[in-house]
Image 1 (cartoon, helix red, strand yellow):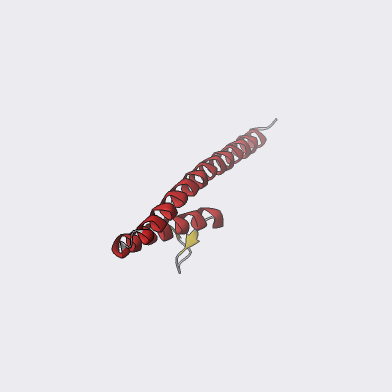
Image 2 (spheres, rainbow, N blue to C red; image 1 turned 120 degrees about the vertical axis):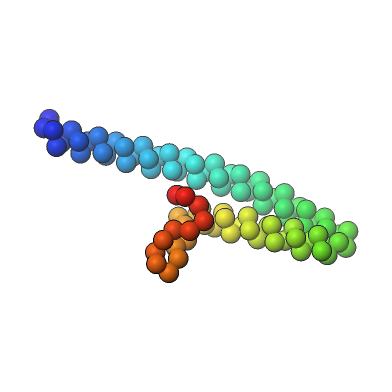
Length: 90
């Protein structure tokens, strides 16, 4: 194998390992986000039943934020008008 071929092969392995690690981390974040969403949803419903509308509004905002982060992870990331990724590092 020539020097260039060996370097190309090494880069392919590195890229595949990076992609596998990225997917693993995304799956872990998604599982955690599902737990967070479930908890915030339960708290929001509880606050509404207790007629604590101020608390319910806060819980709803937290629920919306968690759902946004989950959608961000599922979409592969949102970008700003310049094409820069925003929010999470992957």
